[in-house]
Amino acid sequence: DDQETKFVSSDNIKIGELATSYLIDHGHSKIGLLGIDQSTTGKQRLLGYEKVMTKANLVVDPNWVQYGDYSFENAQKLFKRVRNLGLTAIIAASDMVAAGLIKAANQFGYSIPEDLSIISIDGTFICDITSPTISSVSQQFKLMGQRSVTNLIENADAEFIPVHITERKSVKNLQSL
Image 1 (cartoon, helix red, strand yellow):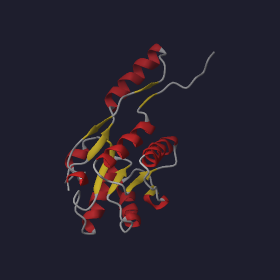
Image 2 (tube, helix red, strand yellow):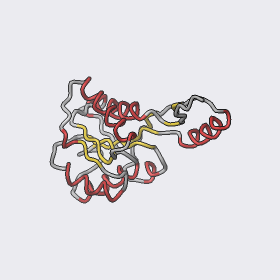
Image 3 (cartoon, helix red, strand yellow):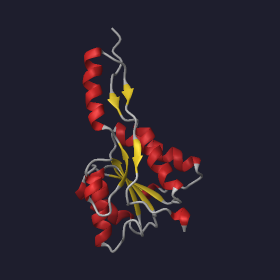
Image 4 (cartoon, one colour):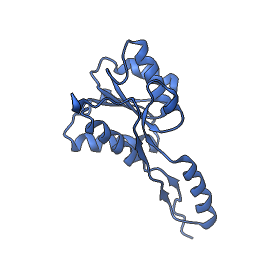
C-alpha cells in the first residue's frame, strides 16, 4: 500500500515569494521577515523570501529574519530587535504578528505605512480591524477545510489551495515617490 503523504494546504514557498515580490514591486529592498517558526511551514516561507530577495540581487541580512511563535505578544518583542535596522518593509508571519508590529511601531512613534510597510500572511478578519488595515497574502482556510474532508473521503491526491494578495492600507509604494 502506497502511504504517500496527503495534504490540502497553501504553498508556503509561494506565500514567501508572493509577499516578498509584492514589497519589491512597491520599491522596497530592505525587507524583514518576522515571527516565523522553525517548523516546515516557517522554513518554506523563509525559502520563498530568500529566493525572491536573491533573484532581485537584494541583500538578506540575517538580523532581518526574526523567529517567533506567530503571536501578537511575540511580535512586539521582535519589533524592538529590528526597529533600528533600517527596514522599510516587514513580512509578518501571521495577521496577529502584523497587528503586534503595528502596535509596537506606534508605541515607538512609527507611522504605518509612512515609516514602515507591513504585509501579513493569512488574510483573516484581523487585517480589516487594525488601523491601518493590513495588506496580506490571503489563504482560503474555509476552502482548505472543505477540500481536506472531500479529499480524505475520496482518497484524493495532495493539493495546494491558491493564495492571493489582498491589498489594504499597510504598504507604501516607494516607486511613486
